[in-house]
Image 1 (cartoon, rainbow over the protein chains, first blue to last red):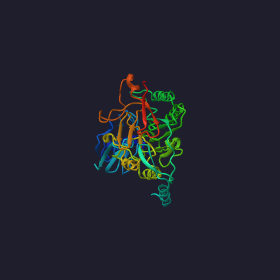
Image 2 (image 1 turned 135 degrees about the vertical axis):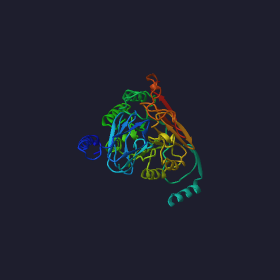
Image 3 (image 1 turned 60 degrees about the vertical axis):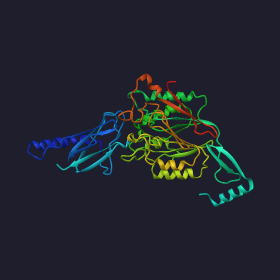
Image 4 (image 1 turned 180 degrees about the horizontal axis):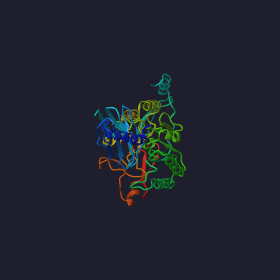
Length: 114
Length: 306
């Protein structure tokens, strides 16, 4: 249910941009990226509007995971070098997360209503 | 703790036979002749081997083939003058917990011709079941998440798991259930029984910024402090670091796959990209020799280069 978020995001983006072309709701939030490098999430704290798809990319030589803390909102599989994981944040809130292999690696996504 | 029956026997022993002083496993103890309690097997000499962090499946700088260096490590074991009674693998058997990685590791290690006792590293917890695959394969005879103890020729061995259900912001973790088991496991042992504890992540904090420690290790160490000889073996940091604290000797081992930077000497942990010609100087296996009354255990770390 988590791994397919990128695939699910594609038709959704298409639908929204079509709606925007005929004067519908505001365009979809710009996708955001978190780069995993040197055993850190960069940026460690990221604020995005509701509806944003965040993609984590592992730039390290070591596998990492992206696992939500108390919210249990998302859990990636192990990301090897250059692998990525995406999640679309449809509800406002603060999502603390960490790497389950290297739990000293922590980050958070703050999702705000636009 | 001591049963009334045992107390009675001890008193009878004291009254009837006096004391015999022995020095064993670093502890001078007065053994009351005729004392009851758990019979203690005398320590008889033997050797065993520690290998660690084989990371089968790793194929990046500085080691394009972690299988090849693991094979070389096994060849080192086969060439030992005295064959080990068994092998301890202190985790990160695999790079990504893939069945083929575990298969290859098993195939290679089988060539050593000795029984192997495993504890998992965090790289072995990456299957869908978060460690189920490792436990299905190596967990026979273990309890809980894969911990176990066994006795070999008078030495008590304890394998601990500190990579399961790690918590955000933390380091390695043993957990209440394992600590309760450990307390029970050690309770009946004489303090002169040599202990060898093996696990993946260090049981003392080598470098917190890199997570090189175990959150609740002090609770485990408190249970071990009464013993005269405790040797704690681990991997995870891919280099030799030793520390002695009272009767507890901490010993981290080399990897057979790649070295990591010294604590704090790089922006982050991870594979240290050394030149190909230096790789085998940084990888190795460890032989430990048990001798009656000797503490700490005699260690011989051999690199793949020699």
